[in-house]
Amino acid sequence: MKPLISGRRFPLSALRAAGTTLLAALGLLAAAPAAHAVPSFARQTGADCAACHVGAFGPQLTPYGIKFKLGGYTETDGKDGKVPLSAMLVGSYTQTKKNQADRPADTASVNKNLAFDEASLFLAGRLSEKIGAFIQATYDGVGRSTALDQVDIRAAHTFDLAGKETIVGLSLNNNPGVQDPFNTMPVWGFPYTASALAFGMGGAGTMINGGLEQRVTGLSAYTFWNNLLYAEVGTYRSLSPTMQSKFGLGRADDIGRLGGGTVYWRLAAFQDLKKQAFNVGVFGLNTSLQPDRSAPERNKFNDLGVDASYQFLGTRKHVATVNTSFIRERQTRDAWLAAGDADNRKGHLNEFKLNGSYHYDQTWGATVGRFLTSGTADGSLYASGNGDASFAKGSPNSSGYILQADWTPWGKEASWGAPWANLRLGAQYTMFTKFNGAKTNYDGNGRDAKDNNTLFLFGWVSF
Image (cartoon, rainbow, N blue to C red; front, side, top):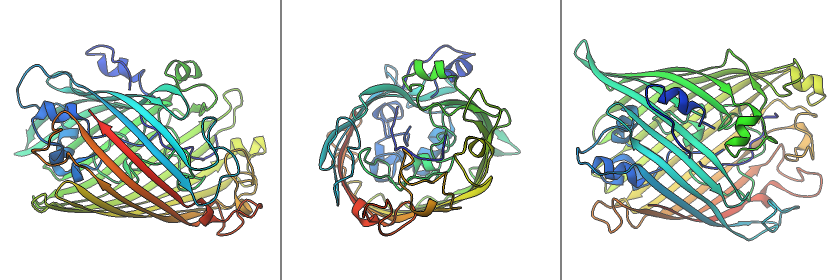
């Protein structure tokens, strides 16, 4: 597998049973980005969407939402008769500045595409006093297939340690970072929804940025002490091709065999100051992959990230956020080198993201984002026309800006839809200053980075 990102998709499935519920459900784990604002959580807690989510719509979490996730999705208002089921639909229109050279999907044209992006079903909420889940299964309207999507099954316990509130828990999940409670990991990063029929943010991406999602199972242990310090460590193993096929993922994109020494870790400091909150942290993923399960050579990936987030919560009338992260990945490419897919044994990738948002009255929102990917050039690994993307001079470098305006008509506490439904309508525009290594003629056919600029209009409803 080369470090190429094919796009974001979101997903669900069934649970198995109790004490071994956590291990059994690991088999259910299995491309996307995000825990969404699902109405089943609002019904369970009796709180409105704006209590948990910035702008009254997911996935950005407020301090209350962070604590709800860390507590295992189990907080409740004590009222019975609530079924932890929700659904989601996304439809969109995508237009690029210049027609694409080829159709981005079998069901699409080279430009101006209307699409039914996805339909998801969620098992999301409290399963017992100390166990909760967020499990998503998704029908991909572009690829016309159904698969298990994001999974996070938790067991959590809260107690006093030296007079300080302490949460300890376990998470069974299928994507390193999907279990993270903050707003800066790639799986939860802006943009929170994006076109499957355009160019994303370039062709190259780090392993922690979607390289393993859905095709692995993982178990991590975490603790949150004194509403201040968060720590987590876990490990992952890859699903067999047979299991990937059973979960609707198919065998064609098998990542290969994951190394037994795979480690995911996370440290963060968090402060909730009532009308504002912030966190700073570090995280990492160390793993190896045997892309050809019949060959001995492996590639090694060491990802190290730093991140920070700030929220101004005010009185909910005016809410502003800033999120940023930087990831550096060191690669050892023995498998690619042996297969002739790389020229250099060593290399690296860097990913930087920064975004700021403002929401007025839980209804109107605007976000500005900056993204930048850079790394070691390699003529074979990042080859022009390599089947995944065209790269200029073997360079993975891409950069640009994303602008979004959105309207959430049912975001306020007393809105018509709460707590049964929520809706977001948005317009998003992606501007490239560099794409896959160049500003101009990056594919050798006269296509410039700005020709990939994309208008994305979307309707996103959960109910």
